Length: 397
Image 1 (cartoon, rainbow, N blue to C red):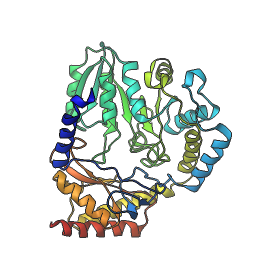
Image 2 (cartoon, rainbow, N blue to C red):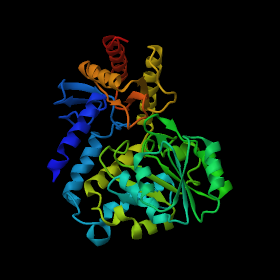
Image 3 (cartoon, one colour):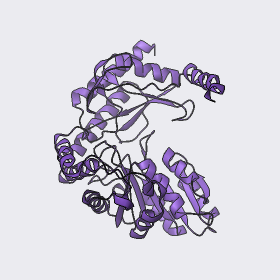
Image 4 (cartoon, rainbow, N blue to C red):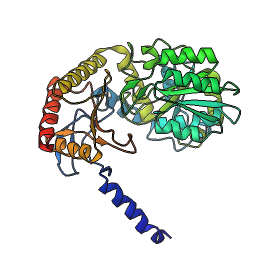
């Protein structure tokens, strides 16, 4: 049967390549860290990694690795089951309790990924009597999760409070209304105005949901994310997030929310009910990550310093970087093919980054999304800036 469509698929792939939009996958032969060893993809060797979500540098932290090794002996490799059958261990409950306390929520439920967490919320809580009001630049997992439910869909322009209020006015006949936003928008590094969003939610009797995947662990005074940053931890009804970025970089997601919401998710959320439990080794290592995050500000302070240094040096060198102070620092290029070529030139100069283009970002807004880490040294950051300057010259800019 596939023979009938093989040529069409091949033609589509060729169109992607010709447009400069093909996304090659580079192979890494070392642990995730500030520097990694690339074993394939044109320029093998050890390179500085400036495109991982390893914000706190914990992906290869010795204490996290030790906790993971101990967990293998104590808890085994995997559960081979879903939670409600025979897939719940003490370590899963411990992590849920710790996340609830850390995020200031009443309860937490673990998922195999944040994509699954976002995929399991909307269908469980909302039906055709309800309305969901979503930021236009929300993550794909939120968009797909909303598609699974029957609620009316309203969209407001990115971080546009006037448009959000208009959508709230137009949906006042709904039984339930849920405002949903990324805490930090992953392609831009922009932070959602959560205090003002919560104010509107109070005025129009709506709930608030935040996907805080690119904030938990390092944003806010205690690393508790954008609700802490904006002083609204007690006003956000649902927080989704991942264990796969700042919190160790492995995998797994969660929903931290009001007690009744989590209880209903345990009964009705399809990605939770029909997916294997989070591997116990990840749950145990994540507990150690939370110990490290709560015990010291050192990693957060180092990350902030690296971010400020990179942003200032790149601006001085004449590059266009979207404003902000988040460690997502998008270097704007515009042309997709040019962004891809610049990434290749940077890899040749020992800096691993990726060019982002459509459909990940809008047409004409291709970029190199640089991501800083606490694992980077000052020398690493300065070397990356020098590589950008040199690669730009080689590109003929």
